[in-house]
Amino acid sequence: MTEQTTGMSFSRRNFIKGAAALTATGALVGCAPAKETLAETGEETVEVPETKIYSGACRAQCGQGCYLNVHVRDGRVVRTTAGHFDDGPEFDRICPKGLVQPARVYSAERLQYPMRRVGERGSGEFERISWDEAIAEIAEKWKGYTEEFGPKSIAMFLGSGNTGTLGGGAPEGSIMARLLNVMGASRVLPDRDIATPMSWAYVFGAGPYGNRSSDAINAKHHVIWGGDTAVSQKQLAHFFLEARDAGTELVVIDIAYRVMPSKADWFIPVHPATDGALRSALSTRSSSRAGKRPTSCAITPRLPC
Image (cartoon, rainbow, N blue to C red):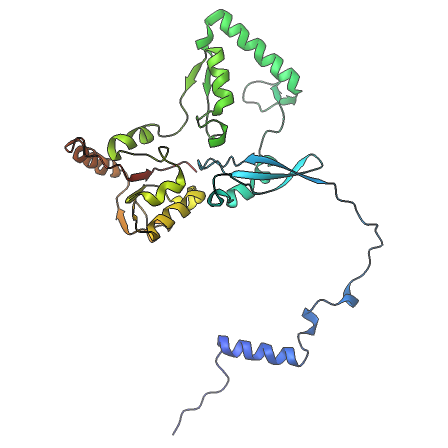
């Protein structure tokens, strides 16, 4: 005796067949846009101000400094699109970080204008002042500190979200670096691991700033250490992947199996805080082979992005 079941199992095929049948009988006609369902508002057509496009660069701190077209309407940035780089179309890209730059500019959490503290320190009481007032007040205080204690008494802590490759390449950008040098002020290093980029050349014989990104395809090996490039440096990831497809060995050293490890030829997992021992071992091996450091290797470190 054959067992019988009632009803019909739900599958993708059944869903498509059912939807097609309903459409044929007009059951889904209400889902289609119809002119009859639109009501006139009676309002006059609003004229949209002219949009002007300016050249700019992304400030998302990934280190790529991608060119952006900044669309400005009625004095406000309304959108960003990929800009053009004369050296090749491979640089004409924009990632989600670049697309949301207008939201960063006009964020409610961002300080939009100068503020002067009017209450006790820590009370959170401030008043808005003009840019001229702010500049004059700061310059007067700096002048007083310099005359009384010397220029080194003024220290500049720079970085933390404002690094722009196209702004000069330095952690503080070319404008702030010039101001610091003219004043003779003290410099406080940015809040990042400066020892990491300094060690690249000693350990691997090369670094990411020695060659342009498009030259990645000419390397024999790429090592991505503790950084998920596909997330933190989206514009750089495609150069690594294209190099891998062309025969370059892609090695990823990380504590977790994330996006870039899934694309690597060789994934080396390490426990947290133990990659220092691995690097020391590599450094010892490199020093024992004096004069034989590799020249076709690049490394991408952990970045605070």
